[in-house]
Length: 380
Image (tube, rainbow, N blue to C red; front, side, top):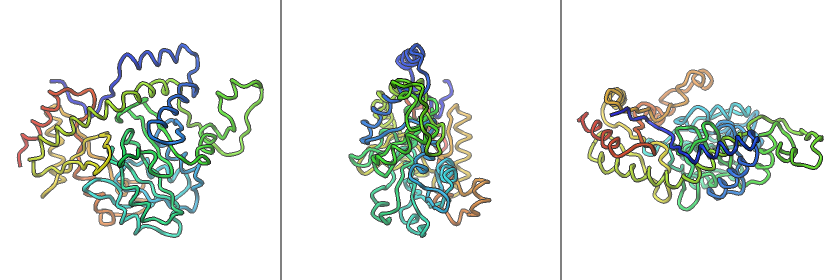
């Protein structure tokens, strides 16, 4: 049996043809394919505006910058998340304040967010980790009205809380199309919002601060006129090659999630009797997008047992990964914030005891059976 990867993008002839069509059109940078991708993505996620970017990280930065968050402001983010969530706050000139997570669902703790509020708090970034939506309604109820709530929806394309899609739960959101996500454009991201003022400003800032897009300028009646630049901007534009990929992938999103959900249920029913494994939480109402299937090892010496299990899985041809890291324990943030595991115990526990097992749309039944077989061979 060949090695079972932790994740493999699912692409086919449709993606090849879409990219080929774009190459033959001669329009390779941000243009009509990106615009179509944005329109379709916005409709799928129930938002008024979607802006494609070079990555989720740049979408996060753009979101904060367009919202006017900067020097002197504090933004609360969970410690148990990929480092880019906190990095984007620093890019914007603000200060990240780390909050703990609930080890039962891996998402930000509303109670700890409330404890971390100060007069400088301008926003909270809630991460929909691994595809499970965070408790945005709980945050909104607990927070003063002036504090914005942003979604790091990197893992959550197609996810929902009740009937409300990720990306439309807060004031704005950022998605990722990295190859480990359910749909991919290689690299790439998307900013979504229902706030028209934020969207207009973000659209300008994404394109160096230009008042009009390159497509508008080239198709206009006076192409010799350069755009005005009235705000500081960045080059965060997605290419039409990526937009072409994204359109085809987005059309497959619901199928991908349905298939992943089927195999997530298979994992749940076959390993539920392993008493040292905590299964990932499902939403009480809504859709989990299953970007990853992340279990947590529980019991005595759980951290050491997790590491031994990962080695055992690797020796048997199965790739695994820790859920993610705890930002407070990374070198740069240790120096900047000087926090310890005692300050963020839930994040520390999740860092040391979580493990993602393979779940993606290129796996076959034999792969899933092998993963379960090796998990069960470990014993207690």
